[in-house]
Image (cartoon, rainbow, N blue to C red; front, side, top):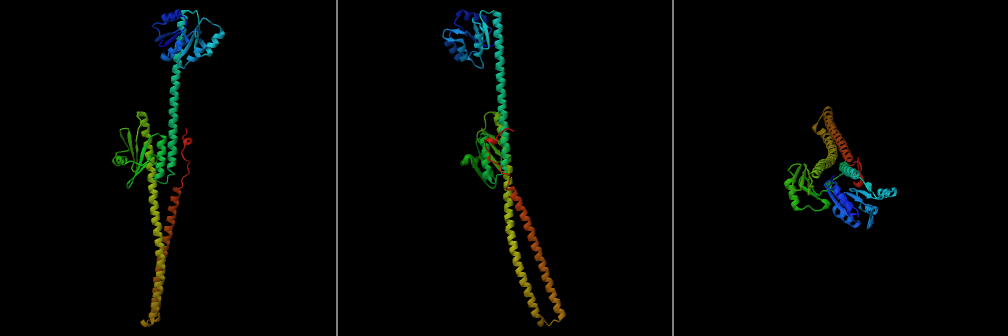
Length: 380
């Protein structure tokens, strides 16, 4: 038996008997002749099986058993008293067995072996339960992380600028318990510190040096995470490789989502600039058409008047006058048709502009999401 046994009895001859009987059969054997000795021994040596008498000079065995009971310990009462009441008291005190004196040595050894097996089975069960709890907690943690990532990507859709993107990223950093500095790089570097803290010149220089060094660039206990327009520096990676690997997986997902949303924001900004420019051009076109209308009417009217006043000077006959009049009217009609084409173009451009503005308005109004909090991070 690979057990550490403590014999607690006020009879030294009985203790020596047990000593001789179990010598070489157990891992360790101790003796105590009183409650005080037993308590002191258990506090220092932590035996896993106690052979306990019901009556001791300084205490009741049942009370002692209640004080010394533990999950990883078995108590066997060994007593000359063998009534039903005493056996019930022993059981209520948490005893694993009860051996009545006098006993046969073979029976004693068999009962002790059985108790050792019982204790080993109990310890194995406790270990399995501990492993099961650890696995359950790990599964719950992973499920909550998956839930958070799902909410993270939903909330990316609602971000309207880089400041909101940064706030969402640092909420994720708080959840996954890592410290980081964030940088957007497009036509310059734009830095964001955790908790709105300023980014030191040294950290800015690190970004400048490592932005182009691949998706994941570890150095020491730090990790630079890069995409084309988004980078962040994880300042303290976990020391345990398994936890570090999980965090690397998480940050790789985060940077991909941040990059995709940054590209979407950049596309929206570009479209807005184009729409604003188109609106300005539309206003210029409308003004030009109005000016064209006024100048065309004035020009046609002037030509008509000038030519009609010149008929008597040119000494044209009636047929020739009609020819020139029709020629002027045909030219004016052609110019008016051109004016109509310009107005039709203006209307088509207005329709296109309205469609683009409607599309942009739909993109800017995603489904409203509640702020991310602990209640949202739940199991699937």
